[in-house]
Image (cartoon, rainbow, N blue to C red; front, side):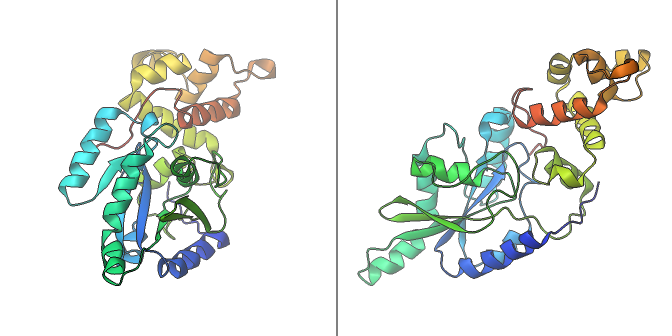
Length: 282
């Protein structure tokens, strides 16, 4: 699955990001802790090259904690200032310290001129990575709009967090051409790409097959699936058909409701109902 999709609003978001970068002191980049490699936009390395960055592995409540620790060790070992965070229940102080490190140069420069500076930090990341929820957690109020789908934030929005810190919420940004088939498919699993442009049954089947390899016990328990041998013995045409049988998703005439099964698989994985699962290993 190769996504070569770059709608007009995303091209506009890229232009806005470039324009706003001139006005900020540092960047907080968010990625999804379940997908620490594929949920990072490679274009940001070039776009934000002149800015100090803090990398936040967000949604750690949905990721395997051992895998998150391994990713942090790898990233920090390569010189990246990375931290893990749960935007629903995490401690804002942890992130604020990382932001202070990223903006220390700007504070020092301002202090040398006798200026008590308000730090301005841009929050960036792919769609549906949790930027608005992250900002709301830091500010302690619902300042930025949130929803469990991409494209909710369509324009940059400044949010004051403290007397000396402002965060800029930005629209989610993908890159124009995603040639890595694994990355594009996994981004779609997490809802970073609009469901309307993809075949949901094909996507759900791919996710099920990946889960049966990486987290088989969780997948079987959640969707009432037999083991791999049982799937073969039952002559199911797909794992999605086995979900229909296990859940009782049937249409008239004994037909299997694979559309309903696909929606359930994607929705429940995104909501963390299969447990804490990381799709990429360090």
